[in-house]
Length: 223
Image (cartoon, rainbow, N blue to C red):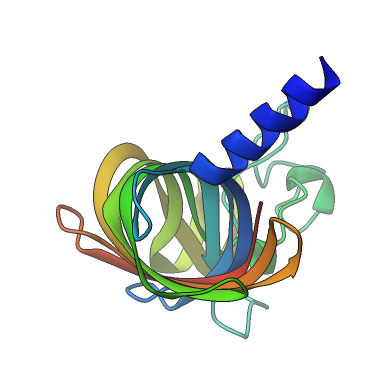
């Protein structure tokens, strides 16, 4: 039985390759940095050619808010506070009338859950190192929030409501959608142990429908 397991393991490693990757991600359109992580499985059907699948996620963020936030306020209040804004002791200048929101910690955020299918071609390989090119499709579930604009007001108030002045109100947009992209990647790896490889991976991903372009690069470990 032990011999059968060894034979099966060697046969599996000759045809299949399991890998994990992680590194930096850059969303060019939004000038947003972040990270890219995932796992994958390749099937080798010839010395130079393989097909594979991968699953992972990418995250990018960037802060679009002005550096001077001394005048910025969000026109909200805590649900437990039943007093109208600016009424009596519930003054707009009283912190009890405001939720705990810190504008500088609300950057534009872009999250993608990715499933990829691709073809891999080995341009160069030997017993120690190899260089691969890959081309395929990426199916992504995207969840994004970003600042649309800043609304400036000279004063807010009314009858029986004490006015306040010079507010800057951020308006955010939230969106979730499915997207399909084209991914082109390059990997250089070398053997560090029997059937264990360490490499560098770089990839370009373009989503034609949304016009999004990403660059990912980082470390890849395969076995």
